[in-house]
Amino acid sequence: MSEPRDKDEKKKDAPLKPDEASRREFLGGAGLSVTAAALSGAGALLSGSDEAEAKATWGEWFQKNYRLMTEDEKREAVLRLEKRYTEEFGKQTTVDSAPAKEGVLFGYALNIQKCIGCRRCVYACVKENNQSRDNPEIQWIRVLKMEKGNFLAGDMDKGYPDPAGIQVGGNAYKNSGVVLEGEHYYEPAEVPEKGYFYFPMQCMQCEKPPCVKVCPVRTTYRDPDGIVVIDYNWCIGCRMCIAACPYWARRFNWGEPNLPAEEMNPVTHYLGNRPRMKGVAEKCTFCLQRTRQGRYTACVEVCPVGARKFGNLLDPDSEVRKILEKKKVFRLKAELNTYPKFFYFMD
Amino acid sequence: MRKTALAMLASFTAVLLLAPALHAEDTYIHYLKNKQEPADCFESRDGYSNATRTEVEPGLPNVKCSNKTGGVLWWGDPFDGTEPMGEMPVEADYTREEAVVKPRTGQLKYYMPCTACHNGSMVPYPKNKNPRPLAMHQDIVPDSMNLQHGQGAIWCLDCHNARNRDTFIDHKGGEIGLNQPQRLCGKCHGEVYSDWRDGIHGKRIGSWEKGGKKRWWVCTECHNPHTVQERRFDPIAPEPRPQYPRTRANADHERGHGAGAGH
Ligand code: SF4
Ligand code: SF4
Image (cartoon, rainbow over all chains, first blue to last red; front, side, top):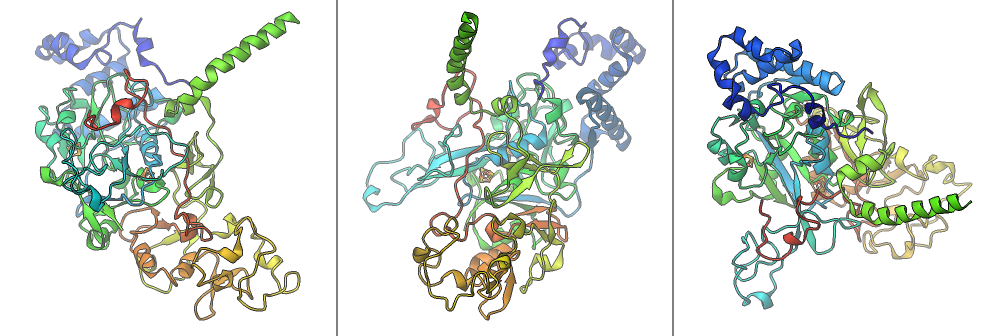
């Protein structure tokens, strides 16, 4: 097992190349003159760097917002990335650009009575979606451990909820442990632990996503199958979306991502799990590189207790629709009118 | 001589110094760097639903396993080692689309098959269904006179077929294959059985699409039928915790009211 590659290392002696300079630096400095210059001028700027890489870099920096690209431009962008990743990670990498399927609206349901807090979903996601493994460590799913509440008559007259806690359950007099105050660093020898339940959280793929509203460059948007996607190339790293998301779903690449080549999943999608760069936001996409091809998400497939359910909300026979029909269901922070497509349920 | 002793002492101190530090590092990157991925890993029930790691095609493993717990963390081939579910008497998705299961017989410790011994001569057929202490298999049912499943209402031979031990037995005396425990459990647990058929209870992997091929988990891949009364699901070791924030050496900031699950 090799060490995660440290990309900062090779930077030190090489002359500054646009792909290795930060986007802001580049756009703010040299970029100004370049945009004014004709395309031939760009060649001069990039001289000294390897021709193919320079071309790829140039293409990547100046490609359009993914939503505005023509089919040809998308194909070009995807080929460019495939070539770069294949070289970088030393294995044949594909970058899919499959659009949303007609008649599909993805929905998710999670049985909080079943979840045992084993965190397999967390790492299924990491393995599937090419998150940075270390420094920064990025995980899209977070499993909160919470104390079980109760409705004991004797507690009914005991004070109001802790003013600093956010009450989402319990009774009106006692927060009963059911405050949004879970612990997610728990490390017992075995799970589940007595007296606790577990509450996994990830992107809820809101129908009215606050993160989309605040993005100043509109690089994050809702696709027709209901997935909130990100064009990483247009992300300026302002982190407005991270602040806006009420579900703590978005993560930021504070440093150059560390993804060991042998850990890298080479089956990727442009809007999904392709390797990211420093300074961009990312989050769960319901594994769209898989789900748009008909496959279940990685987290559904590893959950050892079958707590995770996934399917098409527009299909009355799908697992999620049957759950909505038969089970007690709630959405997290429904009062915010974000209309999550992620449902929690109980037997 | 002295040199070796010194070296030994040095390495011993190093171990002493390192060991607790490594143990405290319950993080993904720690296990990635310091432990090998196991070749035999478990799906839901350790010892009773295992997968052997192989390559489906160059670079694509059938499963990826946890370096820490040996649990399956990723499915490259969701249909690895499966076969068609077999006939099911009640209509559900499995009668309309391709449904496969992993045969249970391959996961059973004593299956050679069962009738290799339970054939009426080597082990005589029991005369009646009355509970009695077991002469063997106490590792599976330690106290047969005190079987919790069914709380006294049922005993071994209400599920296991006395005359053909390679099968289960239904209410009318008909045989149920060992690979279809759902048909046996469904005899009593109707509500759960109905949820299972709808894909609400239990687990399916493969294609979420209508008409798509799915692998269904059957009852005993998660539940131990002999101890299920005490524990629905046997506890397992959790995967590593996330790393603490850079400025913290523990998670104390998360405990207590008001700390919140904040950013
Ligand atoms: S959960 Fe957060 S990241 Fe996901 S769509 Fe809603 S606001 Fe956006
Ligand atoms: S894999 Fe399933 S049981 Fe384990 S933490 Fe995730 S949702 Fe809970």
